[in-house]
Image (cartoon, rainbow, N blue to C red):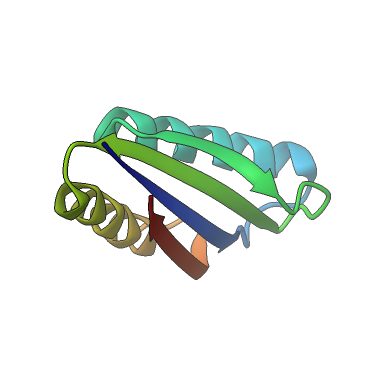
Length: 93
């Protein structure tokens, strides 16, 4: 069993309040779960309305599969119009 973990720092330029940020993040986290079958949640920068940090986790039987899922998520985050990807790190356990 392999666990893949990703951590992304995002900028949400259109957010004018924490409510706007929550709306954008809820939509993004739902899309990540539905499209990639991963667990995703906001894990940091809770008090900043234009920045967010999300954590992503996937479980697989092979490291190469977990790595490919996390790479696909990176590509997905890069093309989203409502956010800007600032930083992305992955680890396999």
